[in-house]
Image (tube, rainbow, N blue to C red; front, side, top):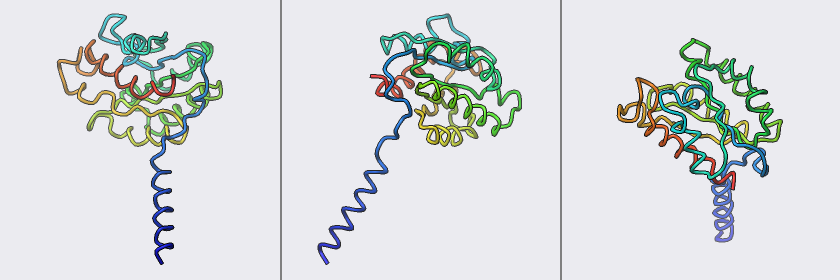
Length: 202
């Protein structure tokens, strides 16, 4: 009986440990290429001078070049149209994808946004690059996208960067206007991105 109980405990422990292992990230083995931040106004750095945007701050943290491929006002549809020119043609190693805000503002259905992001991730991964998917929700703000983004990242074996605007969107001292961060806010975002991706690009 003791042997059976011990076996049950060992099997249960194995399942628990398996569940706690880190998710495998597709294309994590790629060692060359560019780090590209691909997004809308949050990536572009709306509201601050060039150099205070989060990709520029991230570049300093990583001590490696980072390309800012953010375009103010972009939707996921516009992102698909410029993906080849702004990302795939630049030999990406890791692409940090950040879209949904303008889709929401333009009443693009959430399911359509997720479908577009699914396609964007596929095309990037087919070029051999890693993907990190950024979630710009914070509290109730864009909450409807949070679970869908997490599921998509898990499905695609991409890095998930959750709630990057948390405690920024509700803090006037970290914003340049109602929605966009200021230099202090973008620095916080860069730190959150750094923490999520750094172990995958060493």
